[in-house]
Length: 399
Image 1 (cartoon, rainbow, N blue to C red):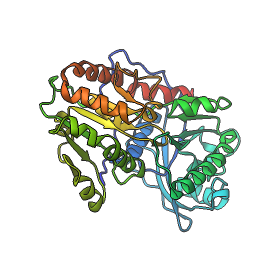
Image 2 (cartoon, helix red, strand yellow):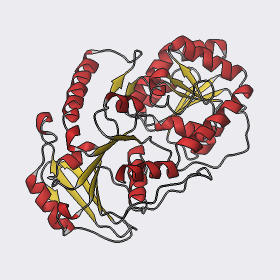
Image 3 (cartoon, helix red, strand yellow):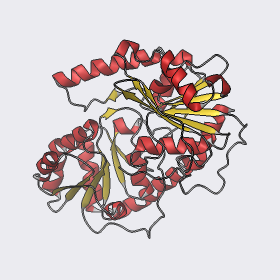
Image 4 (tube, rainbow, N blue to C red):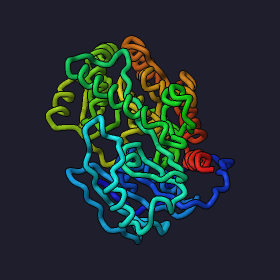
């Protein structure tokens, strides 16, 4: 686990990027993910959100996590919150599904005691995800803004079917239905996916895409000399693992048949037994974590994202484009980026195994022509997925 003092991440942004002048407000950020832990995409988004909110005024942070029993620690100040706000860590009992979003009066009173003020003293309460902010009794007159990252879990046509996945789909459907019933409690929300935003026109919303925490400097443009295909992600995460299984079953044997020296590198944490099973396939390496991620991207002729289920968007797509590597993604993954990234201009999109195979072969046989696509994809990331734009969208929601 990687932690660091909270500070504004340094990201490359367009020269003309501007942010609205914020109105000074007192803000409480409620988050189940610590903004000090930037080893995950969730933590990175939280850190970016805190940095943006601090331009509006003093921000206190309630790090509220599910727990077996109610516990609220004392407020702490210091280097963990460079903006001068207070940090409170708390645990709240996680209720059964039907009571998951019901406010907890005892928790609210304990949190107010730790913060040294009442919730009525804040202008805005911002919820990183909906669960935490819904546990509090926020008084009328205090605005609530909820970040609905992973609002709806979706499944593409290539997603596997089994008894377990059917049960999961039922649970996800019920959780989504219950969350939709909470939307009236929020003055505005952030959506990550344009699909989620389009399906909820009744709620005031801002499309706030996930962005890379830091954009790497552009190395000298070059074509990878190997015929290496790369996947980067948390391989213990079921949608990622299922995507790799799908690739190895439906795509990789056909690619290897046509390009026998093609290799596939799977970078990311996974159980040793799983990595060993994947590495048993011809040309496949599953090293887990790597010391030099930039080198892993530089050695790849193609980055693939064969994901067919999940919520929100896949930040791994933007990371690959930020490294200026040709990127091939499933049409399911593309649905989260279709308003800002253009297929065949910024990246490659495949609807089925046949298209996935065809695109892989085209790039591996002659990667040179795809270098300009990779550079165009990086330019799109710089234009649409940068820290300045992220901050502007947050300030727009608080105006």
